[in-house]
Structures are given as C-alpha cells and as structure tokens.
Length: 482
Image 1: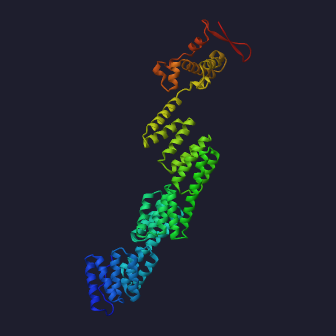
Image 2: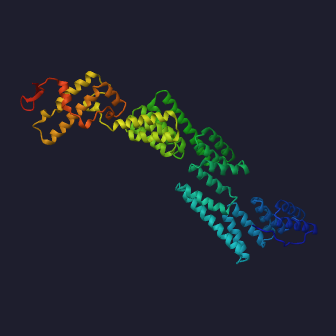
Image 3: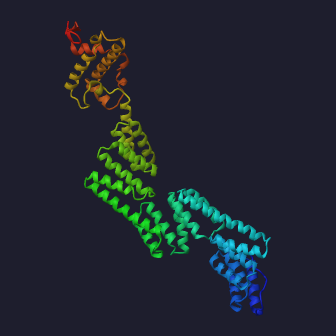
C-alpha cells in the first residue's frame, strides 16, 4: 500500500508541520482514522501544500475511500505537477476504481519524470491487463459466454477492488447463469454503499425476475429507471416482466375456462418473450404440456416436459406430467424412470403409489397380452372370450395348415398354442384375476412351457372322437366331429 511522504513543499506554519508529523506517526501505527484527522488539520492551516494532500490521499487509500483519495491526489499534482507520489497515488486510485485508461496516463506521467520507476512500470502493466480483461469480457457478453465474463471480471477485480462497474457486470452474468444468491449478494453489497445505484437496482430486479417473483422485480426495475431514466436494460426487463406476467395469466385463465386451444397458443406466445427467463419458461413449458395432454397431443406434451426439465432439472411437476404422458402412451420404462426420480426427490405416499403402479404396468407389458392374442377388450365378457377363442382356435389349428410350408406351419402352431394359453387363463376367474393384477401365473402351478393347446381345444369343442379338417374345395375348410 502507499506510504506518505515526509517531504514538505513551500513555507508552512510550524503548527501545520506539527500536525503533519503527528499524522505520520499515526499512519505508521496504522491508526488511519487519526492520521486522517491530523492531515486534515494540516491542510486546513496550509491548503497550498501538495504533500499534505498526498499524505491524506495515502491514508484514504488505506481506508478504501478511493474516490476521496483520488480528489486529494489530483489536488496534490495540481499544486505540483512534478510530485511523483501524487501521480502514482492518482493512478492507483483510478486503477482501484476500474478507470484503467486514466490510470495509464498517470503511470506514463511518472515514467516521463523517472523512466526507471519500477512501481509505475508494474502498475502500467496492471492497467493494461485490466483493459484486456474488459475487452475479453465485452466479447464474452456478446457471445453470451457469461462464464467467461465472470472469469474476466474476477481477474479485473483483483486489481480494481473498488470498481462498481466490474462488480455489476459480474453480478448480471451470475444472474444470467442462474446463480441468483451470488448475484444478489454482489448487487446488495453495492446498494449498501450506494442505494441509488441504478445498475445494482436493475441486477437485484433481474434476480427476482428470473426467480419468477415478477411483481417484486418490476418494483426494482421502476426504481432503477427513476434513478436513471435512460437505463435501456431496466426498461426492456420491465417491459418483458409485465408482458410475461400478462400472457401467463391469460393462458391460465383460458385453461381454467376449458379453452385449451387458446391456452396452448397463449403459453406458446409467452415462451417467445424472454428466452433468458429459465424458471418462468420451465413453468410455461409444463403448463403447455398439461394443455397438450388435454388435447391428446401426448408426444408434444412429452417434448414440452423434457424442455421444462432441461431448464430446471429438479422440477418435480414436469417429471410427474411427463411420466403420466408416458403411462398413457404405454412407454412404461420411461414412466418408471421418471417416477423413480420424483420419489427420490420427494418421498411421499402418493409418489410411492405412482411408482409402484408404473412398475406393475411395466411388468405386465413385458409378458404376453392375452387380450390381444384373442383380439378382445380388457373388459370382455365370458361369452365374448369364448366366441373369440372359437374363432381364433379354428383359424390357427395345425390341421387347417397341413399343406402350408414348414415355416408357416410352425408359425400357425405357435399362434394356436398362444390362443389356447390365453383362453385357459381368461376363462378361469381366479387365473384371470391374478393375470389382471400383474401377478405371476407360475405361482398357480401353471407352467406355460408344458402347456398343451390340443387339450384345451378338445375340452372346448367336446366329443370323444375329436374332429378333423376336410377340404371342400380349393382354399376352403370345414371341420367335422367324429
């Protein structure tokens, strides 16, 4: 840090010199508040002495009061343009406040006075580094590479610790990256020091806006515009916030009124307003998915839920909605995966029940669908099941396909066996009940591997002599009992 100079300029009363000496003693003891008081007394008594201002500037720098220190060091070099420490301190204040171009000019002036001044040479390099970080940050912001901007601002702030501009840019990018607590913390620090800082008010509003607290956000944007009426970012954010709120509410109203097509359009419009508002857009996608599922646009609803989850990975409502759509489209593997995620996040009874149900449907989907085999509905009556069996059994009976190729015979035999299996299960109330509830039929001692479809056929069609298929012309068959 800077240290005061002992050198005096011009003739000053002995008492002023005494105050300066006392100030120097307090400065050495690091009692900067007292040092400041004595340097001020010296200045009040002798306002034309540059070294007094230089000393007070050094003290103010130690107190992190860089703006006041800048004024003192500028006054010192106005009184003596060859006062090197004054130029160095002015440069250091500019640097701490993030004014790298002004800092450069000060350090160059020192090097004109003393070309081998190592401190000025080092500080000039620091000023150039800051200018480079600013340039890189500007490119990063344009490319929406907000991590790059945060990195550059952190490096710049190592050298310009008191620069509000760098802090604001960093906090704005943290907000755009979804790191709201950190962004708010930086903006709040600035507002504690300067409650009228329009940029900090804007960033504070931005965090609230991105956290879907739109009414509170608008209040901050309005406050920022009161402080700086030409603040374009605050004006745009304020407009977006109001438009987003209005469209979302219109969509919600249309949905409640049952105007699903209209709600779908309104949510779609809302999604075009601000791609940066991740949290609100995640909700809008989920809302649109709800409407989509009502309109039976299930694939579109699944896609919207996926987009919502991409924006907000812990959005339980979107997982639940997507899982429900997966269930409706019989994509049970995916439904189970989503319900598992939900249950891991929120272990409620309801979520456990949904997961169990999806696991059961998945298990059921992996076995033969006997209803499909017979070509009947799941609510088919006993009579409908018998009729369906009669039709399918006759269609696939091996005797009927005796003149077909070996491959076709094998295929028909397989189908005949499946039809028999299906009938034996669905015509037995106990087995049917177990089958419908997803339980294993093997537990009933029914081993489908050893199953003989002919026995079922004979039992169904009756008659000790059985039956035979006879050809009654090309391609026509009838069966007769013996």
